Length: 353
Ligand code: COI
Image (tube, rainbow, N blue to C red; front, side, top):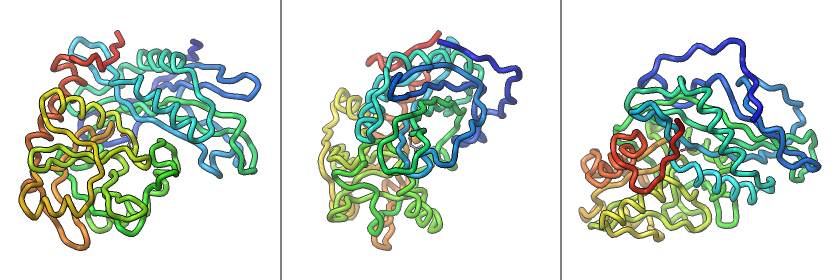
């Protein structure tokens, strides 16, 4: 793989909790181009610097683009661990298919990521709760305004040292159930990790933040009845000893942390159901005292307890606003594997020396 070295390295930020999420970027990036005649080609590592784009480039107009989120963790022996990258590449190619983007060679981007992490290894923060966030992205780069799939693309991976996704860290989040706007519909792009899904969610997110909430809890578009996801997290509820997460009906992102949690829960003997769960069932469980815990899962959010849900102007405080035992077990198990303080019985980590 070609590596273009930079002359001067960037100033690194102070680590720890003040890193926030997605504010700082490393020295290098991976890039690869696609053209109809050459396919995917010109994979390389180059200095992370701004790139000039013609303003008629199709990504700016029709958002034909997809992304992923992964994390690299510093291990106690100094090596680097990436959590389940093969799952992200596979999901990214499924998103690509949905968005008419040509599938990319997973082995080439895997090698690119490895080289990139080796070059930028000093950027991986060491403090507890921090990681190097990996953002692979594909954007349509043909200069053309017709509404057609592009014939040219840029694949890039940028890296960002991050702390907690939420400004308040592991403090339980406050969600408001969104019953006006919708995130995704069956047959739409909800299960693809495409750029437009996130743009479409911002209006509701902004209104929620103005009211003092962290995020919105999305309901299904048809009936505004079933819980879907949070946008940056998949949702789980612990109700009377059963751990319930909304089934992947086509409008929900198939989260990799979600999948990992389901496996851990099943292996530890919990009763886990992937099924449709209505907001009425959640509220009824809260009212009759059987809603023990609610939490979200995601690469950026890790395992985030949910302490409060507002639905139709009424606030419901879950588990006294505290992190529950199942949430804590999953948080400890997943982060133990990721940070190398516990064994990795599933072989989920890719280790880079
Ligand atoms: C992630 O968890 O990696 C996400 O993509 C969610 C959000 C930061 C967009």
